[in-house]
Length: 324
Image (cartoon, rainbow, N blue to C red; front, side):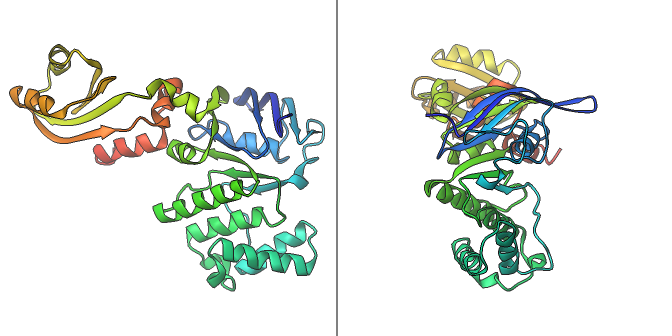
């Protein structure tokens, strides 16, 4: 079966900046495909080209068998587009915004009004249907923007950073909505710099850094190298000089021992017993502020492959460093 989206040798420059440098990837029908990378990696530029909002300098794009290379908007009728910033009207109510979007898609009045009510219920916005969009919370605005993107029941939904700036509860609601839309048959192209989000939602992902795709694979295959590994993190207080080599000598079964500031990470293929390690640190005059067992994540794979820290890892580092 032919992929629903086929991209070959896609390139784009802005003045002297190379935004995309020869991208090749496919997205299959019914897939929830994650396009992952740090801010400035080229994610939004890629979505803009795929959705007909920008033209590439080089390369080809085929969507549902339609060659979009010469006509960027040839497949727009198949798409729902949710940009990283809301494009709805603040002076209109939630219901009016959805109906207006339905009119733009050519939906008859009765159909768009019915569809708008259905989506407001589905997206838990029925109580706010008659409130102006300007008065919505950030999470509510994001949900309504996604609802607007699926007003015409598109076969492909493009989501650009859907949970950026959203609180934990709102982000969880949005992730569930995305999963439900995909389960109902909608192909979803998701860009995000939150790697843990893609791990929860996607079966297959591509890593993009500096305008290039450095790896595209299923999450399961990407995670294969770290399966069966046991990881412990210790936060230590005291003089840690030479602790790495001493630890390796005391615990030769450890696959790796890495010290960063006051944090010691231990990785082993064998089951890790924390008791002897605690005793080891006490003998070396070190206090343990925290000991955590770490589940290997897609973030770790992303950093290993790209060398770029994910958004979540940066947030965690800022917390430990007092926001520096």
